[in-house]
Amino acid sequence: MVEIANALGIGKDLLRRWLAENPRLSLALNRGRERERQALHGRLFKAAMDGNVVAAFFILKCRHAGYDDRGRGIETPTPEEAAREIREALAAMARATAGK
Image (tube, rainbow, N blue to C red):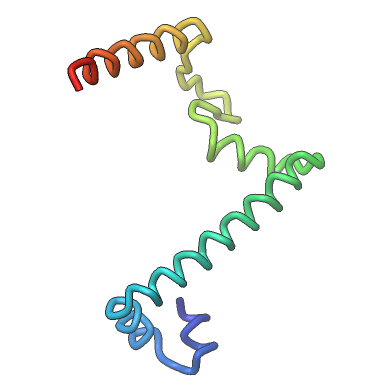
């Protein structure tokens, strides 16, 4: 936020006020942040797929529940358990929406 304010030649407090007062400005900033996130994710993913082990570990830790490179056994369901949980969730959803 400070970098953007500096680039505009204003203080961060004024930028925050403008964002609070102007939904279009806030939306533009959020869209820019999302484009940045997508670009960074793409580069990180490419680095991991190209053999960068640190990037691969980072993606595994952030995106895959239960992954722990230090060997602390976090329980993850077996494929059979996961399939059963999915079937149960789908059945519950079907029951919940049956009368609608």
